[in-house]
Amino acid sequence: MPMLRIRITGEDDAVRGIMNLLQSLDGIEHVEEIADLMPRMDDEDSSSAGLAEEEGPKLHEIEVDAPNAATARKVREAVDELAFQLGALVEFEDDEDDEI
Image 1 (cartoon, rainbow, N blue to C red):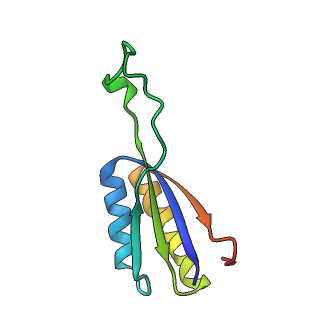
Image 2 (cartoon, rainbow, N blue to C red):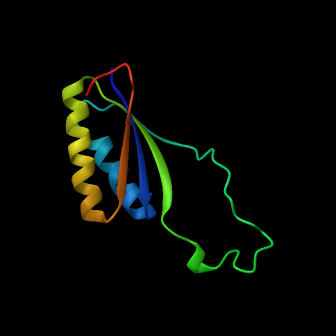
């Protein structure tokens, strides 16, 4: 069973839209946002800490289990299209054992 890991850089609304799309696709039973394990490089003592200009689109990671390679390809195509429409950037990391 192919496992897709999707990194999305964008606003929370775009990520919610992509999550909703993934959960509505036939054959997809598992969609999960993975917790951000990377520590941030923010310097709390910086004079620019917390300024709106320093805030940018957030990085989200999502795991998707697809039943087969054909469905995984459909997921990639659908997510690419919706991300483009929503102004988000997506990056796919495929399970190395599965060819998609």
